Amino acid sequence: MNLREKYQIPNDSVITIAGTVGVGKSTMTKALANALKFKTSFEKVDTNPYLEKFYRDFERWSFHLQIYFLAERFKEQKKIFEYGGGFIQDRSIYEDTGIFAKMHFENGNMSKTDYETYTNLFESMVMTPYFPHPDLLIYLEGSLDDILRRVKERGREMEKSTPISYWEEMHARYENWINNFNSCPILRVNISDYDLMEKENSVEPILEKVGHFIGQTRNHRSRITVK
Image: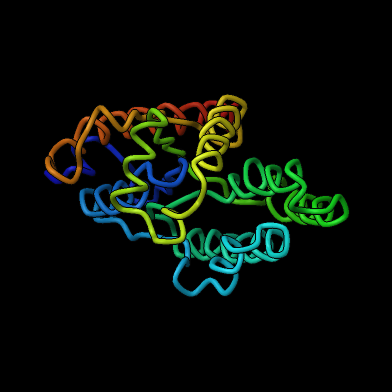
């Protein structure tokens, strides 16, 4: 029996990994995909034409960056569901508006007109009954010290040179965002509870929780449909 069958995770599941920079989303995405024999969906960082410019000048490039991310993630989400599921997704489309665009606007790096244009577009694309939401969002959380250490050890050069105040604000905003998130079921996992880099089998307790959460959600939906 493989791990997907062992923990009763449907083969058409779509699981999204969320959390701030440095928390280990990519590592978790790969570990879950390998364990479940699912495909992966990663955000396109290396081919992003705005990312390096953004880190050099937040005010000049924040709107461009957010529109680019929104378009790319929407296309990727559509492709995943057209394929039939069976995906682990690195970062959610919801973080773009709930954290990043909002932060840039409130910090004066995005004009009110640009922010309203962005949020109107996001709501038209995503906040409708027709948008395919994931079966589960796994939120990776950890202390600010742990996250700063990971950014220093594994982060990109443009991230390492970013002021600590930016990461402090990001950490606080993520916590506020997840506490108010309700677009799909959430499984919160603390990064201190496992070490996928050193212990590959530490993914199994996470898989057990994933199977439980998705099973509960689908059973609930089935009961609603029957009624």
